[in-house]
Length: 89
Image (tube, rainbow, N blue to C red):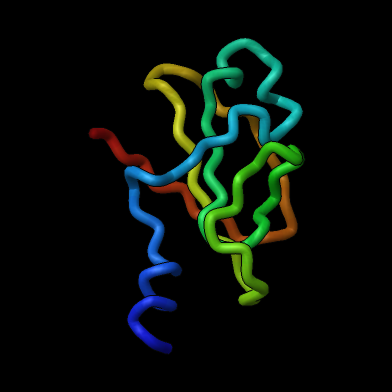
């Protein structure tokens, strides 16, 4: 892999493009402020508006979600491993 190819596969925090309509729950109060990010792979988004940063078939997905503090997250269920990390900045 050359340098240019490698640099095209870097997704920087500042370049992340959120989707606010990734799932049906995005239309409920509180969840309408949630942002969903699909970084590597198609993920589990239900929206055609979801931007996929690295759209390659690699056998896994890497994504992220963000929401304001004190807002609940609706229960979800997937046939995938999901790891939640709580970050504040």
